[in-house]
Amino acid sequence: MADISPEQKIAFITCVNKEDWYDECQLYIKNLKVPEGMKVELIPVRGAKSMCHGYNMGMKQTDAKYKVYIHQDTFIANKNFIGDLLNIFKDKAIGALGVIGARKLPKTGIWWDGLRTVGRVLHACEAESVVDSTCRDIDGAYVDVDAVDGLLFATQVDLPWREDLFNGWHFYEIAQSMEMWRHGYRVVVPQQEDDFWCIHCPKEKPLDPSYKKYQKIFLKEYGGELNPEI
Image (tube, rainbow, N blue to C red):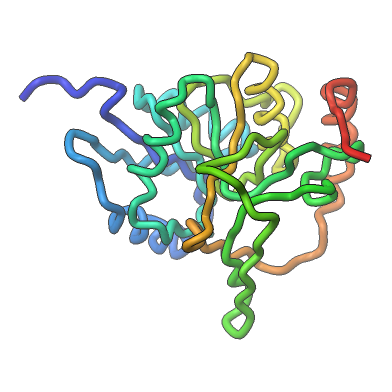
């Protein structure tokens, strides 16, 4: 059998600390339609010191051109996800894709504070509470954004995750979105008018005290590059 090229591989990279969640996450990935000639790799990372540390570890374990960094509590409901992703990534100027984010980051750096948030995700936080979080409609197949949420972060170019700055669990994906733009790549959110692409099942909990710390680190590094809408 001929060697499979990196362009024919898509890797799903996940930081895992709860095996039952990851089992469910994998079930959804294994049910995706795989375009002919493509190979799917599952890369769980256990014992990560931070999100960036785990994702850099995962990145080094595969030569797949396409990588999907996905939370263990995110389930891909769009069975055509891989084909849809490859279609958008035909545009080589697009470096990354997420399912929900902000057209322009506000001066806080917090994407959901933005005036124009876009995308869609089904939030199933508790068994009895399911919320379809729909942000503004998107004209066309996708729209450019400053940053996307980290529940799913798909790439076709490899840039190191900034573990030198973000050695925790917050702002890693906003920084990575900014790194894409710094390196001349676009970040987009796809049209999900017919149906949402992902189900997210985060446990409702108060904001971690370290969140503000990483917000300050983010603003020190990238604040001067923000161009918020007013």
